[in-house]
Image (cartoon, rainbow, N blue to C red; front, side, top):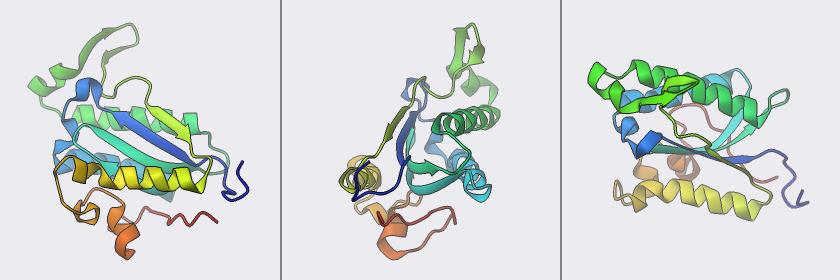
Length: 171
């Protein structure tokens, strides 16, 4: 652990919708992700430091709290959100996610999401900027803080519209 970054377990996490499908394009489905994150925060399973929800993927910076492992949090988050997202689909759209796997009939999230521990404040800051500039790079907005489904505004003016964020100061 870096002495200038005295926190263990801060994770940069990316999950992608299977086949890069734009499943999260509508706000109702984005709110499924928000509600799941809210549950994890409210029930003291994670601290959420940053997020962005794009049409076909999400990025998070989170830290599992005492008694919870990153893999357990990720597995329950992915399973629950996949079930809820599948329920939100109509009969035609759900077929886009049909798979022939031994353990499932549908695959909402791509297998093996990216999860990396952030060992330094420099790496945290780099990933925070990457997350917040995702909507700008995608041409959705011109300033990170203008994208609603992101923590950028929270870091810009302190407003947490979803009441799920913990400001990370690095100390």
